[in-house]
Length: 328
Image (cartoon, rainbow, N blue to C red; front, side):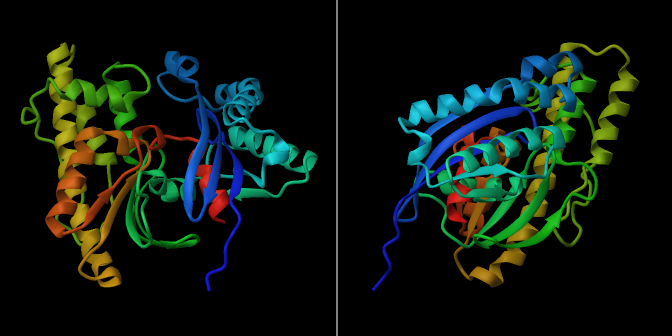
């Protein structure tokens, strides 16, 4: 006989960067149900600086977190007494922001005599595809691409992870943001680069494809970022079309590198799974539509299923933190 486990209702708190987020999730018979999901963005605070300023982010978390948690509890129609636990991001991330969320979670857990689950932010992203309709069942090959991280991970189960490759310098999301800053597109940069690339000529600039063709599935984006800066400097004053062409050329290089690295990662994952695998994408950069389309194409070509969380759960959110807490 299989043991019947009671449903778990968890409050999740995420404050590792520039999103103040709270969510309530119920895990029942292994299936997650998001009862509420509130994200308070800080883009307006950081836009003048064209990047996230840690001190400003921490202050905004202090000012906004109580209201965000209250809204999540209200939207779920629950009180703190109805919770089975509280999950909060405990790192990695900007230390000031992490401390704000973790201390709030500790206070709620202590006041209402609930367990506190400290969640690794990367584990939240690693499990976020389980929020997708139908979910992602273990094991699966994860491409985690965000502003601070870029790596391939074999996700074998909760707490069971094997890293196949990682960036040896910059994360892909950082490269997108730095290009946006270089071209004065605004903040956040990733979606703006993607938008500009739609109207650009991807063949105009000859940009490098770092590590492409080599063994393994590590990444490197520092050289690509530098090459874009050199092309921009050579042009001097850039027109809108110059910017669009450089964005399109950059994105084309990124797609080539991702395709090459993903093929290698799937070859490493195959012996663990056999004939049928699952390729999963998570993290903020996984919201990029051309990248998602390329990964879906690669998965189909190898007989893999492709799974990605809905776009709202690719970027930092508290639903994934609540799920990681409930799973643990």
